[in-house]
Length: 210
Image (cartoon, rainbow, N blue to C red; front, top):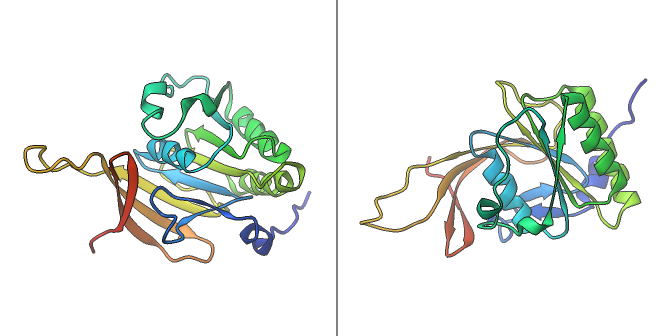
């Protein structure tokens, strides 16, 4: 069965959820689409993106994964009371749950942790579901794939990678947590990199030094 062609114009008209610290510069994630976060700090990035929005968030994790979200850790960046947590037995169940949630438009943000990136067909189904959810719900939902493994997912609207940076000595300066954030690919945007840090609870995004 062939899948319909995705409309980039429709996606761009549904708004953008800002990246942490990126609102003023227009750096964000297109709603009504699925994006991919990679790297050792991908969960931290997703939680901070959650903090940029409002409403309930469905967070789907593999049932065999021992690690779980810690409410006190989430609370540094977002209200953990917004989380609806689900655990799936199989990779296929993770994709099914994410697709159905996006299609329903019932929640504005759906996050799925996956051991490896899904293939092109599942990603296209997720994007189509997010587009359908924009019609079914009150607003365009946004999907985040947090993927492990060596390869990125094909067909995503954008791919981001984040890892922590060493902090300066607290004896010299207290700067809080610092990360390197890279936009590896995105429709209509060139690859770019930033330094993301938290200052007084707020996110600050600065162009990374070349």
